[in-house]
Image 1: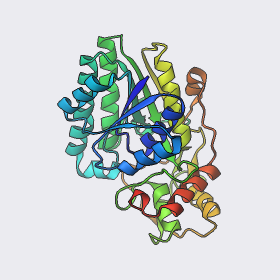
Image 2: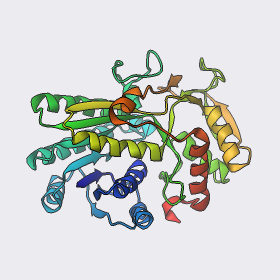
Image 3: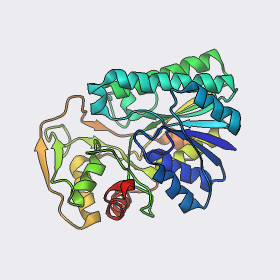
Image 4: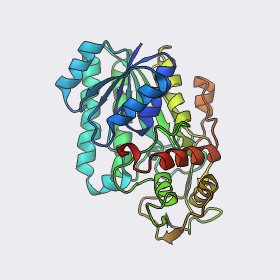
Length: 337
């Protein structure tokens, strides 16, 4: 079975490609390489001993996408492609709307044209906005606090409308919480452009001495240590959730939605202290003012994914930090090494 993975050279996608290949699927990747590296494709091929069919393609390019569907005989699509930095989305919202929304519309049009109606969509816990209670369940009210989150929410609405119009689609919407860590080989991991936007890659850069200290945005939240609490999930556990979702689509479930998280909340300081254990050194940090749009607490109830997909996160915070540090230590410049 051939799976098209859009944005397939990125962080979560590269780990998903590896799991797909190991599960016996054929993987076709489309990626414009604007925020990713071809090296991740080569590393996955080396780790698995299997080949990935790669197309340098932008999902906004309908003709290029159509050619892929004509040539490859795609069965299902896992849709990762999109811009993903919350802060950047606030600065350049139109770019986010054009890329994430228009790109998805183009992809869906091409899928419809070639009668490929199995889709796994990479959504996000940001669609819950500031949740009214935790843990967060899939049926809670949806909102967004930034343009990036709004694109995820709008795409979810598009997919719901598409399914209402044509029930022959099978769509799994996966709402990720906070993916961290790396493959235990240390050969693939998170490789952000420039200074990282996310906590753990930033902590990793401080751990190897590339950055001076971690900025902790606010220590006055209503949490045990005053810092924000999130649900961090190992990227390999997350990748395996996509395999389970692809399997689910073969049962013609219609449109289904799942949280992928551990169900455990860790504070910013928890992450820093666990990372200190992983790297065996002190991580300097400084408390700075809260960022606009940040919320106090968010963690998942992933019961539904366990009941319907047979999936649950298995790797704990120690493993997440150890694997992240192994990747960062082996490749301090990421794929640019």
